[in-house]
Length: 390
Image (cartoon, rainbow, N blue to C red; front, side, top):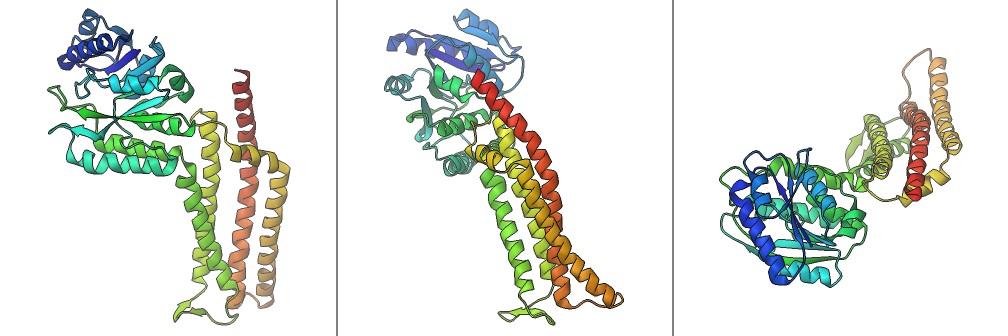
């Protein structure tokens, strides 16, 4: 087993962590090593680690995730356990992790919320708001059955680490691991642990608000349906409903519904919502392509089906029909307007013009999007082909 500790000026606590880790390996009869992934320490941490028999792996790029990724790649053990070097996690009690790994689990999460949090170990806002809220979002979006998604002590097999292909550089590394483990359907177990106060005499590296927002952004990027598709489709449906309702209203007076007066301005609002919603839906598919080609997620069956059925020629034909329909509707209104010598338009004609202009805009927008999607489709297919060859 390899025990990997990220390190950036951890001299006050590093020795205790290494001694506990080596002692645990000896007590459990497990052959292993301690790997210190050093992120540029200048306080003697490197010398301490080497003196106690740990293997130091230098990490040039700063960041919690970068340190752990490099450290885990360098690990020689079939099983890997990670934990912070600030003495907040007890490396003297890793037997539960070893037992769960031996039972065949791919990822074993420590859980502080179902274990014990000693006084002063975790601020109240993290304990009762931040961690539970972020864990709830992760469970809801990805179905990961964990109670403490951001616990820094966890263990996994080397093969699971390689399959997850982790990439995030900062504290969001903790969320990325759980998300990818859930998407890959890895076997996940939990071990209650005791969380101790930070043993250092300086401010911790964690910045709750900044790092919490980075966790949220990462989760939303891994779930473009929640971030883009759902709100985009909602806007499109509401926008179309407003415009269609106006089209079905009386020809010569504003629509009255439940005692409220709905003039043609509601059709303008509907047009705005439809165009904005359609753009958000389009971004959803851009995000899906990006996440696959940048190895944030595995092959996407939606994209695979979409690129097969919605070829460039087919989408251009559909877009042309939509745009032409809008152009015809607008043309009819303009013709009637010319016949009145540019006089006032009937209310029904204004509604039709708004609807037609929206269709025209959607058609033109779709034409240009189709060409861009075609370019992305080539990159997507190339990336999948390269993965197959690997």
